Amino acid sequence: MYAKIKDPIDKYKESFLKDNELPAVLETLIQGLQIGMPVYSILLYISNNKKGNTADLINLCVTKVNSGMDINKALREVAEKSLNDYFLRMALIIEKTDRSVMNLDKQLEYLQQDMEEERINIKTEHADKLDNALFFPMLIGYFIPLIIMILVPLLRQMTKLQGM
Image (tube, rainbow, N blue to C red; front, side, top):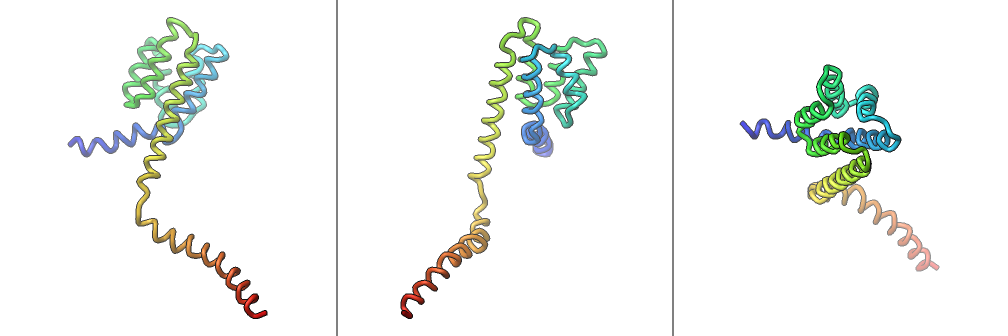
């Protein structure tokens, strides 16, 4: 049973990083906090102007806040629903706005850097697992024509020199 559920859940979790939605939302949050916007206004802007899974979750959060729920509680519920560690970390950082808005943008920037590092690691991991079946098509389609393009002019020059 778990095996059937695991793949869709993993795909849902990865969709936040794959589609570059969460990094874009984080960038919007960072810029909004740097200019001094309230968190609710930033979340409202994101829910109205962004598309994708992350924007849908933030729209759900804004809807809960509009219905009277505390913004921190709404963010926490939505973050738990997202099943994404980075979204949860973002929500926990935003919850700190009650205490102080100072350096929240720096903390979000660190989170953004962590996400970028993970994306690079995932790309490197996929590159390391390059299928060996691709070797022969690449050899036939790329390297052999390249060698022919280099050797044909060289052989022509050598035959001209021998003919003189």
